[in-house]
Amino acid sequence: MNAFVDLSDVHLETERLILRPFTMDDLDDFYAYAKVPDVGEWAGWRHHESIEESRKILTSFISGKKTFALVDKATSRVIGSLGIEVTHIPLPESYRTLKGRELGYVLAQDMWGKGLMSEAVKAVIDYCFNTLNFDFLTCGHFERNIRSKRVIEKAGFRYLGTSIYLTQYGTMENNPYYVLDNPCRAQ
Image (cartoon, rainbow, N blue to C red; front, side, top):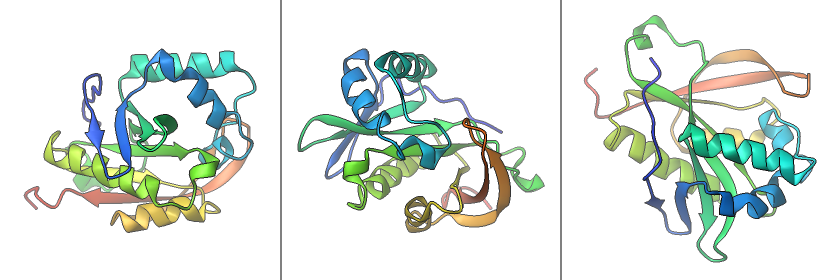
């Protein structure tokens, strides 16, 4: 069961990042990383072709209240997003009455390979399990996206299966998907 999420007033902090709700003041930073070819394509969406496109999506992030802006403490620049999304992953029957969501994330290309997304994911897992009391989280990646696979594995997710994902630009991608159980929940 998809749990209720409202991140309107949530601020998380890691060693190098601040995770907070997006604001319209983030538009330039958001567009700066979302317009780069290959950033969105790794997550199933086309890179942004105009700041107006970014404005529409940023507006949906703000109104949706389920997506963190990832702020680099060193530069105060928004360098990515991490959403606590509705899960569409086919879960075993035993999960149908449990409370959880799916993590989805993207990071500015110039920040890849620094362990920042693993840091952010760890903080959000802690928040979801210890504050929101979720029973589980899910996550997936395109088979060719080895960087995302490493983030998922570092976080301790368990492989469940592979499905086919239709991207926003019309391609079909093999999509391995995973689950992470809250270690504190009653088994």
